[in-house]
Image (cartoon, rainbow, N blue to C red; front, side, top):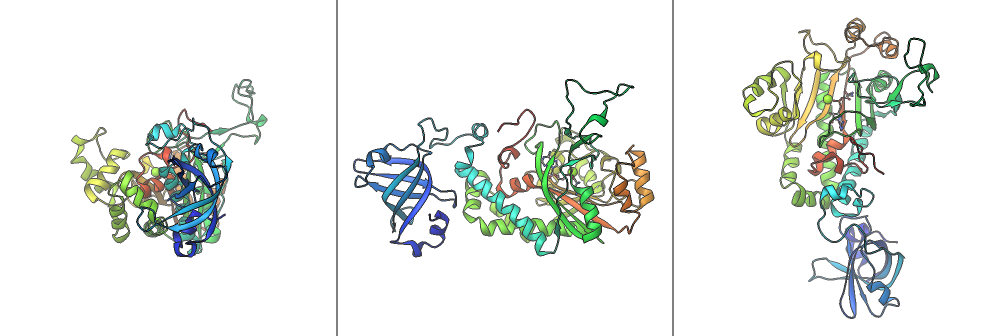
Length: 461
Ligand code: 4AD
Ligand code: MG
């Protein structure tokens, strides 16, 4: 079988040649003695037009072929200089590999995103989702390429873990205990000695802590894997299962971390612009009109930078516009993040040095004893896309912080060991992969950039 992608990319080579294509019917229109089938094989954003005449053996069956059917078409590729498409396939044989019934849920009209979410098994056969999921795939490849070209080691961190890296208590528990008959200890607590791991376990909220251990061996590493958070927030940018990229760099500080984050994002944008031009044009036309101009600006300008304390001063002047009023010490909400990046800087912005009380235990304490060497990268349309920090590398300071927060020293012994045996300055960040795909495509809902989204009350398929 020939891929439609190859035909579009090397048209001349295929003209007047006999080829065979396998694909799915997008539309079938017939006149008296001939008909047109628009066939998509998923290898390219454009489908191909097949022309068939009543000379073909099974003309009467083909005439009745429904949208969605799988066909194998053999014919000659003929240039059509006057038509919209540069060529058409003049069919000699059309094999109906798999028919489709008339109730095929994707008819040739515009469906709403909400409707398409109810058929997540079929939506990759639409233009929009074909474009989204090819860009998602390219984006993942670009991220690997970026890190591998720089010698970073890809580390697979565990999905089942006993720790809560972010300390937010938003974990999905993993257990083999019978929830209807939970074993209890004498003092009435759950008896985890009867559980699979003999202790509580949960799905990971971040691979960072394990990643740090490998950075203390390989210097530069990254993770790229699924992450789980039982956040009870029903928003357009939160999923219960999402993918995260977490690089960790040793002998490096917050400045190095920001340089890495900025060059990674620019690299990925460039890669997708170059390798998915048809898809990106489509998004620019139908999903988000300013997309290409915005992304082109991002790659050719420096990201803005502001400290949390400065950002709060700016935001306080606009408190009348916000639902949540800003004051020093508060966590920035999406409305504040978007205001900063969209109204004040009009480009991606790094916000640094947040109050320690709203950030995770592992972040390096600044000399002011009030803030930590944290950084969030905010982008227009989304808000936070990256969260990172320099890590606390001082054993005594780290243990003091852990005690303040009531963390179990035994659970984090391995983490403390890193500060005991050859501790080194190090930093890292987490890029939310779905938010990155939203940013690149202009798609407005996280449910539409992950194949089978898991959100509150939704675990279909
Ligand atoms: O800011 P977060 O919580 O940072 C960490 O997990 C650190 N351990 C990263 C590190 O320093 N290695 O999460 C990082 C990013 C966020 O900026 C956001 O893009 C994404 O992960 N994210 C989510 N994406 C989708 N759904 C959710 N529920 C998300 N929670 C975080
Ligand atoms: Mg964060």
